[in-house]
Structure formats: C-alpha cells, structure tokens
Length: 606
Image 1 (tube, rainbow, N blue to C red):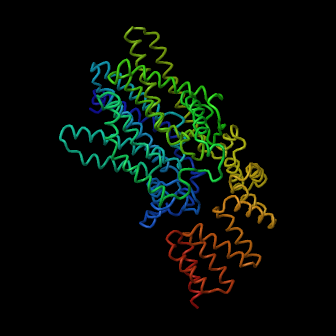
Image 2: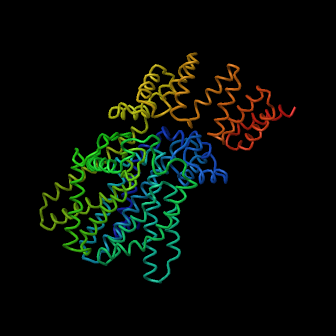
C-alpha cells in the first residue's frame, strides 16, 4: 500500500529521496567532535549548559561570546537555545549535535522543494501536463543540489555555524506561512493566524542569525516573481505593501541593535580603520571580485577551505573586478530582454527574476555595504545558492525537454549521464569535507595550504599541539601567528603560557601585557597575571588584575572565589565577604566552585 501511494504521488517520492540522500551524505559527520568556535560558543560557555530563566535572560541581553567573557557583534539568542537543548540531552557528545544540524539542513531542502514545486507546477502560463512535470523536476533538482552541495558543509558540519541553516529554516517557514496567509485571504478574507505565525517565524529567524533581516526583500522577490499578475512597477509596489509588517519587525530589531543591543560597533567590525572599512566603493569593487570566486565555487567546488583572503580592489578595471561587473551586467541585460519580450507572463522571466533576485538579496548582508569581519566565506552562499541553482535547474530541464521533444535520444542520454556524474561529484566532495571536519588538525593544516599566514589558523594549530604536550610545534605555530602583527591577542598569550611553564616568568609577563595591549577585553592574561603576582606575594597587583576580570567576566563565580582569597591575603575580610556573597549568587553556573565558596564563607564567618 505504501509503495503504491508513492508511485501515485511523485512529490512524496522526491521528498523521500531528498531525505535519504541528505542523511547519507551527512552521516559522515555524526561522530565529529566539536572544535574551534564551538569551544567558546558551547563547551566553555556555562550559559548554554542549562535551560533556566536566568540563562534565557542572559541570551536575550548579551552578545554570543559574553558567556566566556568576550565581546562580539553577534546576537543569536534562539541559536543558543538550541545549543542548550543539545547540551542538556547529550552534553558535548557529538552525535546528537550533528544530527540536529543535519536535520535542519535536510528540512530546508524539503521546504525549498515544496515552495518551488508549488509555484512552478501551478503556472497560469501553460497548464499542460509536460510543464507541470518539468516544474516539479526543476524544484527537485534545485533542492537536491542544495542538500548535497559541498559548500554547505561549512554551515552544517560546523556546529557554531548552525545559525545559517536555522535562520534559513525559519525564513523559508515564514515564506510558506505567508503563502498560506494569501490563500486564506483570497478564500475567506481572514488570515490572522497564518500572518502571526509567519511574523513569529521571522523573529526566530533573526534571533537565530542576523541575516534574517533580509527576509522582507526575499518576500518581495517571491511576490513579484510568482504571486503578482501586474506590470513590474505595480508588482513591486504591491510586494512592498505585502512586506510592510515584516519590514516593521526588522525596523524594531534594527533600533534595538543600534541602541540597547549594540555590544560593539554593530555597523563596523573593524576597531582600527583601514582601506577596506573606510571606503564603500572599494568594498563594492572587492565584492564584485568575490562574486567571480563564488560563481566558480558554485560550479566547481574544489579547494574548499575557511579563512580565505581577498585583495582589496580600488578600481573597476582591476582583474577580476571587470569580469564580475560584466557578469552582473549580462544578468541584468538578459533579464531586461526577457521582460520586454514576455513581460511577467512567461516562466523564463519569473524564474530569472526570482533566481537572481534571491541570489543577490541573499548576499546583500555580506556584500560590503556594511564592513563586516571578512570579505568571503563559503557558508555565506548557503541561502543565495537556492536562487542560483533554480535558474540553472530551470534551463537544464528545458534542455532535457527539448531533446526529448526532438527525439534526440543519444544526446538526452549523454546529458543525463553527465548530470548524474556531476551530482555524484558534489556528493563525493561533501562526504570528503565531512570526513575532514572530523580531524581538527588535518582540517587546519589543509587551510594553511591555501592561507599559510592566517593568524587564527596558525594559532589553532598551535593549540592542538599544545594540548598534545608537543610544545616545540606549539611554539612554532604560535610564533608564526604572533609575527603577523597585532591583530589577535591569543598568540601572544599562548606563547606566554609556554614561557611561564618553562619558568621564564618575566618573559611571560611581557607577552601577557602585549596580549592585553592588543585586546584589553581578552581576559585570559589577566587570570595568569593575577596568579603570578599572587605567587610572588604581590597581592595588590593580583587584586588589580582580578578587579579587571570582574568587569570583563562578571558572571564567573571562580573569579569571585579567587578574589576573596586575594583579599584575605590583603587582610581585607569585608571585601572578601562581598566577593563570596557575589560568587554564591552565581553558583548555579559552576556547582564545584559553589562548594568552595560555601566552605570559604564558613571560614570567614568564624
């Protein structure tokens, strides 16, 4: 009975295929350990180790790194709620973490298929059976490439990158609910439930990752492409009216992020001004270069790696800026040609406008309009690639339909075989990337083949060797990282720990102070300096460093325990009692330290 229903319902068969293929490709990451940013975002962050009202308030009022005493521009409270759910169930055991991220990604592929299948098989242009079948194949091929494309492993296999698939899930859900809202309005004239649910989904998308704010523009693209039957300008105006409630949500979020939730400079990730951060036109020229790289990676995803560097371009006529500009101009010219030929009636125009509109809107947040922390990342294509591949899939299916209609069987077979081989290549590349994500050292060394001077990657490799007690290699990579200039404080701090372990305390102090000079909010060197000065009997200096720690990580009970010990040594028992009291208020985050504080409280009470 089940088999018969699938045969009669090819949509169900396509969905099952997406689920099976997606879970197979990503089954190779299920045992990959959490690492890199997962340390600060999850493992060392006590605020995602329990679900409590205090923690929820903390997520809603702090940046993503506040839980470990660091600062960032990111604000993703709902993402941290999913982290807390994972931790409560399985702590740092990787299987469930990856299963959740993989499932969100596969759910996104299914929703992409359902949305595209809905609009491409119900066209008012030509309702022949062939067109319906072709539309379903366009939807399936787009969703299949999306679920297996190796570029997406950076967003799916990296747990700290879960914000991408999670935010996209809620954006797609908001779009699906909005379509139901329109249908209800047309049939009953009432639609409050679906509109409220759709707006709620948008809020969750934004609270999962900041890029959710582009949703109203995506809705407008979808409306103009597939909903409206008016002329272009009228369709755009009506789409804006449809998107107004969603723009209102984005406006409220924007006001909050620029005021009470502006943890760092939200509109500029660069503390020190530079050529890129201070010139909008240079950022746009650089983005046009990045577009060329993106197109190559979408078609031929080889040499994948994180931490890519890009030359900052100052002229439109530099290579490959002019090539990217020509590609963009061609896309616009073809769109104008199709529109003048068919207006908004033909499926070619609809798909062309939707695909490229979705692609460029999806990249808007990382286009350089606002100077963010990098010029290019593979995971930034997670949402935009849906638009890119729907255009490619549409013309591929048209080609196959043409070959079938002309009865060119041999060419049809050859093109079909080439497409299958291409899809297998994507799947193979994804599997290889998932396996590489499972070996942190091999993963970082692979990046260094492309970016040998990367400060973060060299520092990460040093950390791995440090944890393996291989101090020779750890020091080697830390020195490479530190030699790149005062960008990150971590390499100097890490070198300081090695010198401290060797007994070169004065050398360690100099490196700790260098780390603080680079980043005054980097709290680790303050901890080590407090210990060094306490061991030397210089309790005043120790207290000075601990007071700075209280400002940077005010919710860490261990800081107050150590502070109490220092003030006891300074014979300031009143200050020690205050520290113990404050620490006891935070013991739900660290029960072990709580017991030490309780014992110290009893000693002080005597």
